[in-house]
Length: 121
Image (tube, rainbow, N blue to C red):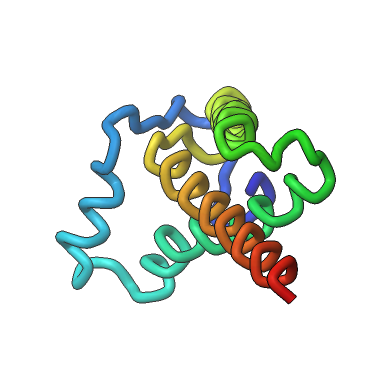
């Protein structure tokens, strides 16, 4: 997140506070972005956080409650986005919070499905 090859330090604060604007641009102007950039920014922001939805409730059983998990995850990812903004290593992007949360929720649902299937046996 902070040490990726495309991160640069310095310059102005960069941020996006408009929900879905970055996501919309990637889908609307898909032909203007190289495929690997699209994958990194859309699929990557979702896929990288799927394990969090699996591991956090296992490590912290209280986070097996969906709403508590969601609250804790959003606070954590929001904090990382703020850190990116103030360190000027990347930018604060509300769309990253949305995509990261989608990934974590997918992981959470997968864990629930696995546990339900395991309990049926």
